Image (tube, rainbow, N blue to C red; front, side):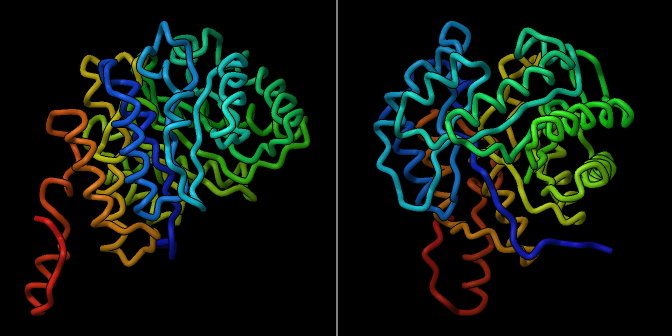
Length: 328
C-alpha cells in the first residue's frame, strides 16, 4: 500500500549546492540569472549561496554581491547556508538574505570533524547556542537537519541504533531549549541511502518526532536518488531538497569524483511527482528551461535526464492533436 502525499514542497539548492563544487570564475550576473529563472518556475524557496570560509570555498566569496544582484520575486524566499557564527553574522549583515533558524546534527563523527572541526556529540551540544543566537535575532527555530543519516564515506553505513542515538541528541536539544521542531530532515549527504533504508529511517524519525514533518535531502551519487525519492513518497514524505539539473556535491565528502555527488535533480523529481498526480506548484517546462540555462552557464553536459529528453507533454499533445510549446 502507498500513502502518496497530495502535494509536496521542494526546496531548491542548485545555486548553492551546484556552484560550490564547480571551479571559481562564474560571474554574479550568470548565477543571478539562474536564480531568477528558478524563481519563475513556481519554486518558493531557493538556497542561493553559502557564507563560509572563502579560503576553503572560494566559489562562495561573492555571496553578498550575488544576493544584491538578484531581482527578487514576491512570494519566494532566498536563503543561505552557514556553518559557524562568523558565517551567520556575515549572512545577517546582508538584508537581501531571507534568514531562517535551522539546526544541524551529524550521525557520523568523521564527516562532522571534516565539515565542522568537532565531534558529532560536541556539535550537537553546540546547537543550544545556535538556538539562543537565533532567538536573539527573533528567528524561530523550526527545522533540524541530520547529516549523514544513512552513511558516510569515512565510517560506512550508519546502523539504526546510531541513527536513533543522533535523533535522541536532537530531541534533547529540542526539549531542553523549549524549541518545537516543525521539520526534521534526514540528509543522505554522501549517497548511502537505498529505498528500503529510506522506509526504515523515515519510520524511525516519525516515531521519535511524531509532531514534526519529516523531509529528505537526497543525493544521486550512486544512481538511486529518484528510487529513494519514490520510496519516500510511498511513505507520505512531502518535503524534499533538490538541485536543478542535478548540480552539486560536497567538497569535503571524500568522493573521488565530486561531479557524481549532486542532489537529486529538481526537474526529474517534479516529473516523477506529476506522473504520480502529486502536485508540486512548479511549471515543469519552465524548470526544464532553467536546467538548460544552468548547463549553458556551466559549459558541459549536466546530469539531469529530463533536460535532455524533454517531458512527455509534447508527445501527449501530439497524440491528442493539441499544440504544445515544449522544446524537445
